[in-house]
Figure 1 (cartoon, rainbow, N blue to C red):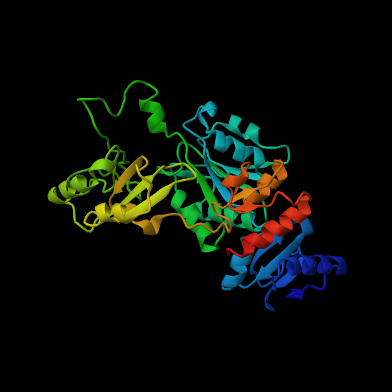
Figure 2 (figure 1 turned 45 degrees about the vertical axis):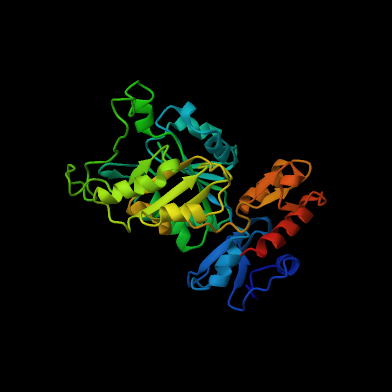
Length: 375
C-alpha cells in the first residue's frame, strides 16, 4: 500500500498496525490518504473513521471491495409505515436511534425523525409524481457515498419499501459496490386501509385472495389489467401440506411447469430458510431440504419474481453468525451487528465465544480478524 505525502507519520504507523493485527496486506495499488482529502483521478474508497483515514483503490479491485466490508456499516432500509408514526416497527425505530445519517422520503411523518440521535443528520430526498426533488440516480449515489464514508446509514421510506418503493434500484446500487445492507419490512398503506378499517381483503366464503397492482406503467401511462397482463406473482398461505397438489393444479390451469417457485419458511426470523425450484420440482425440493419435522410455517411464492436470483446478496462477513459477548454492552453489540452477526446472551446458542475479551479495542480486533476469514 502507498501512503499519501499529506499523511502524518503517526497515521501511517496506526494503519500499518491495524492491518498487521488482521494479518492483512493491502495491494500496492491502494493509497492511504487523510479522510477529508479528495484525490484525482476519482477512485473507489472507504473511510476508517476511528483513524480518520481514507483507503483509495481502483474500482475493479475485487479484493479491496471485500476488505471494505470490514469497515463499512450495513445500510439499513427502514419501512416507516403508512403515515402514523406509531406504526413503525420496533426494529425500524432502533435503526433510526442508532444512525449517523437518514435519507428520508416525502411520505413519511417527520415525527419519526425525532428518533435520530443528537448527532444524526436528516436529509430529504423525497419524490412525488412529476415532482422529484432528488433524482433516483442521485439518491443511489448518496447512499453509496455515505456508506463508503463509514457512516451508519438509514434509508427511510414510507409504507413497506418493497411495494412500489423503488427499493430494487437502491439495493442494486449497493450490490454493485459489494456494500452490506439490510431491509426492515413495514406496514403498507394497503394493510392500514383494509385491516385498519374493516374492509378486509380476505373473508371466509367471500374472498380467499386479493391482487395488488398499480394501473400506471413505467412512463406514467394507465393500463388496466386483462387476461394477458395480469400480475404474474402469486402468494399462497396455509399451503405447505398440499404443495404437491397445488403445483399440479397450477400446471393444469395453464401455468408453465418451469415457473419459478420459492417457499419462505419462518419468514422474518433468524431461522428463515428458503427453498426454491419450479412447479415441476418444488415438492421434491422441499422433501430433499434439511427442514425440521414438523415443517415450520411457510409462504409459497409463484411467478417470475420468485426466481432465487432476486434474493438479496449478503455482503456482511459475519452474516447470521451468533457471537457470545458476555456482559452485554451497546458498543460490543453494535460492533457485532455492523458485521452482520447476532450478539447473543446464551453461550450455548453461539457460534463463537468472545466473552473473554473485556477491552473493547481487543474485542474489535478479534472480531475483525474473525470476520476477515469469512470474506
